[in-house]
Length: 193
Image (cartoon, rainbow, N blue to C red):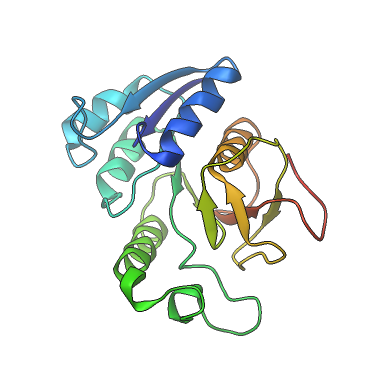
């Protein structure tokens, strides 16, 4: 499979590139400052015209340019966003509005992830939005994770960037039914992957 990774030099994007290469896929990376700009529609049309799927692993970047290019080129896109759009496990609200998960100093980043999902929902492109759990950081690749829909997984609500990349590649290779899903490290409940 030919895969474009937007944000290929970041924490998540670099792990997605490594996992894709590990699985034998052909990868094109796009990174800010390395001849790439996810807000350049002409560039995105060119990048996506030659691939089967794309992964957007950027924060704060308006995803409509990539979604427009994906729609024009009929390319499936996985947007790796934030946890803010997930429902809290103990109430009707969103993670965005719960100070246990989103303290004031990171609220702008959380709001950006909400906008990303809203842009996806309003778009005709074939997209999937992956919300990581509450804690995402570099770590070990175990190859295992739990998968949920639009509610924050607990016990633990954490995953390594390496295992998030495993989930991204699993979704590319065997698409699930959900347009918005989340993953977390194995814990209570069945593991996927």
